[in-house]
Image (spheres, rainbow, N blue to C red):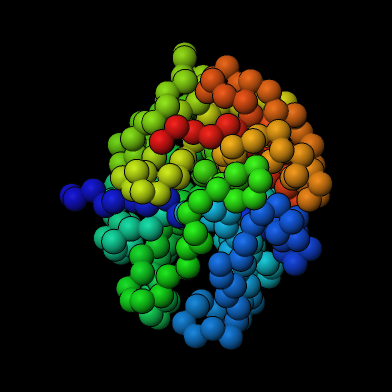
Length: 290
């Protein structure tokens, strides 16, 4: 079986009040590259919910999608009933989503939403990785594509999205799965005795600096998320030229304080933590060398 190429694209936040929540992001150097609603042809609709997607970006390829209830599918509504506002899934772009279903299932993933074609916009399905986190897989059959923003540091702090952090129960097995099945490579390995973290990147890393970080909980806030949800997509990761200024600006924009920037021995860089309106963690680190 040919291994598909997986490109990290965005994460999806199920948010009770996206119109209110997005103002915090917009005050913190973010832009809206796309908004999709029920009147747009071909995007998926059901009798119980429609499309309400707001994409947010900040100076880099990795984006966030704020999705508003009611959610289109029963499996999404069940997740929201259990977990509330939070990061629901990470989305990967592949050449053919249809050809990817068997590849993931044969490597230990379950399917939450079967493969479906949404007209000329996109084709896709939602899988569940071996520890229970959701993986959306999409392909674009035509000209439709969520627009990118300009890739350069934003504002005086030089802020940019960098990727996402997923908290793991068995870190080594998850690094093996994401490298072996999704074809990611290790950029930074700070593991010891199945503890710590690993920075993973896809094949586009040189031109699209996006990271999928797999980690075990190390802070009180991370331990609380794991106790509440189990293995979870926990954190939106940023890099900044001036971490302290970026952190202060986020607090001024309405983000909650979690931990002021300090040296993180695991990655050898200053890192600060915040909490965004949905309750997810936000991590701002010093700029990562290319």
